[in-house]
Amino acid sequence: MKSEKDERAFIAQNLPYLTYNLLLFALSRNQKQPRESGNPIIQ
Image 1 (cartoon, rainbow, N blue to C red):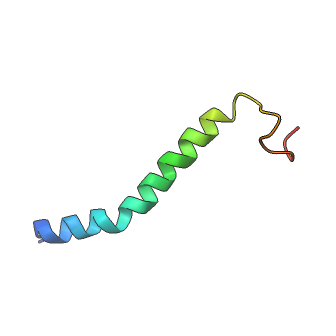
Image 2: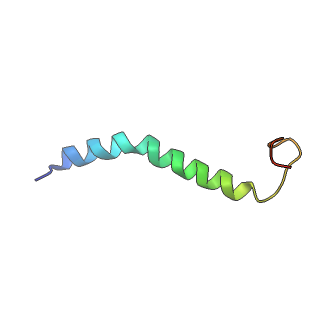
């Protein structure tokens, strides 16, 4: 049985990963509009 403290520790450990995924998601949605100064690889 997990205690509430364990659950909070688990969330705290995974928070950076979750925020990173959210950032990637937001960035990938923004990539739909091509920008000149964005990625020179994608043309």
